[in-house]
Amino acid sequence: MYLVKRRQTWYVRVTVPPRLQKVVRNTHITRTLKTRDLAEAQRLRHVAVAQIKAELDAIGKGEDGSAVAAALIWRDTWIKADANAQDPDHEHTAQQGVELAIESRAEEIEATQGPEAAKDFYRIATSKSPMLSETRDLWLPEASRTITKQTARQYDSDTNRFLEWATKKRVLLVSDVNKRLAGSYVSEAFPDIAAKTINRHISSLSMWWRWQEQKGFVEMNPWQGQVLRVKGKRGNKEEKRRPYSADEICTLLTGLKGRPLDALFRLGLFTGARLDELCSLQAKDVLEQEGSWWLSITEGKTENAIRLIPVHSAIEPLVLTLKKEATTAKGNPDGWLFPDITPGGPDNKRSWNVSKKFTRERRKLGVDTPQTVFTRMNLAEALEAGEVPISTAKLIIGHERGDLTFGGYSKGEYVNLKVAIEKAIFPAGILPLV
Image 1 (spheres, rainbow, N blue to C red):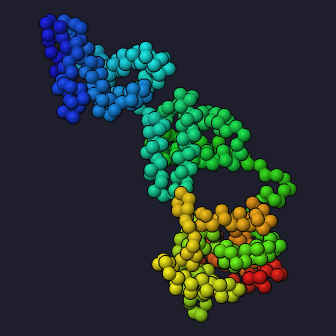
Image 2 (cartoon, rainbow, N blue to C red; image 1 turned 45 degrees about the vertical axis):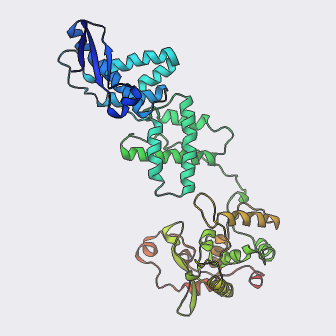
Image 3 (cartoon, helix red, strand yellow; image 1 turned 90 degrees about the vertical axis):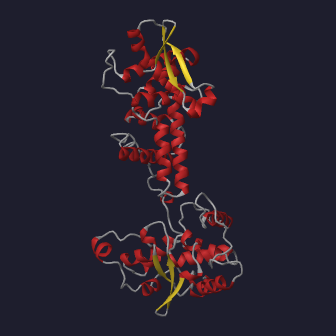
């Protein structure tokens, strides 16, 4: 098989696939084995045939000439070759025959691209471990089905940074990455970068390796335990997230009055809803039940975010006005309560541009406090001041009720949330401004 004899010399002859015949400009490739001895020819044929087939694969796949691209093609041939059955005419298996061809190709690469490229070629071509870039390109599309576009973009950026570092270190295979190398990456690749940001990168890489564990590519996750400790400043309360002070709330209520952000801020203050939840409200989400008005949150950050929020009497006129305007406004077929919002960001969130604008506006008013959280913490404080039970407050704000009694057995269906919201006590001077 494959052997042909011409003028006492043995050759191998391999058929070119029809789709490649125009490129190769022939129907067959014939190559001399440089021997007249049949036994010798039979010993050499496996290597020669494997090399020709790999070259044809390279043509078909558009090999770019790099050692890595060539190695991937040879690896496929090497893995498929029989590693157990010994050739009856020789003392090696078919896979060993391919290895001889790989060694020959490595020598050619060394002559043209240098010894490091030859080492990379041989190591990849004779390894069953996938390349880092291969598994990353499989993982990202699968992960993107269940995460936001913003998170997917973050994963892409963080893993690209690691791949660039790994390539410089000539770390190309998944099997090359162990605890020691992961530790080196954390120590070397992030000069002058905050620990919190480094931990985000580590988290992205850990998610990638968790997926590889699930798929059987690796046995352990080298990124576990690599997270850096983030030290807070002892005694510095300003480092922690906090609600707006009474003076800051009054400044914002006064300064934002008449601006588009005014209504959003007032709604947030008395509902505890997240900014994106408010921006996504439609007229149909303002419901009347048993003589009370409610805001229906149909989508959110967590499962507990899907809830009904009782409308506090202080903002009921505002809510009803927004509902009426949304229903009657022209060019608002979806009935958005805030129709002038322009969505933005990777996930096209309605709150994307609003959040940035709110930050700019509050800074103009002198409320330049990055630790503050958009109104949610203020309602939590007001509910606590009104002695509303924590389990009830969580139903309004949309937090998980983790205990078995209220979180497991009870869903809070019989809790009078309307009465609870009216118990909220805000600092003096705020209600008159609303």
